[in-house]
Length: 158
Image 1 (cartoon, one colour):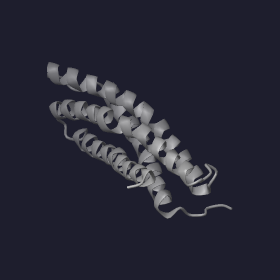
Image 2 (image 1 turned 90 degrees about the vertical axis):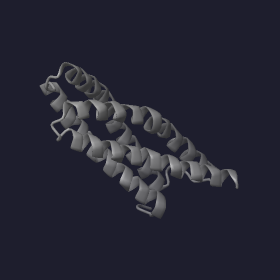
Image 3 (image 1 turned 30 degrees about the vertical axis):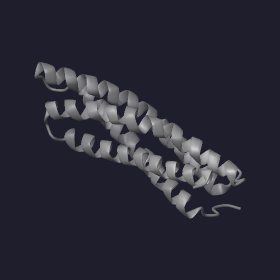
Image 4 (image 1 turned 120 degrees about the vertical axis):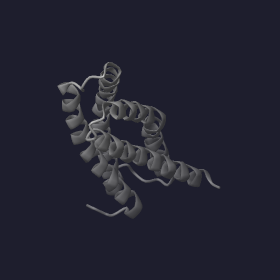
């Protein structure tokens, strides 16, 4: 297998981990936050933070490294419309993801404390949960569009 195909395979697998982990985390956090179970929220927020560190964080670096390497290997300028838009949307998703990480860390800590004390989650948890959710939508849509652009490579503007 050539270096290009190896990078492409790594790029595809890491994109699957990046978006799959994000979607899975969003699914479980979304529904657990509506469950009324502080114990479940403590467990799920802890695991979502762990998934971000184990899966999302490495892929955040692997994606641009492999993508830019492949573009360079085939002589594709970064100003190529579909590639430029993909990079911009990837940055947008990252801008959404960074505060999400911060929110998740604090939500995890609040949920763990409330579960340990047998108390309700504080109002701040719910404010953070709304922000967490609001940031997740544009990040997910951006990544879905990136997938479209990567597969179809449309001309867009000339």
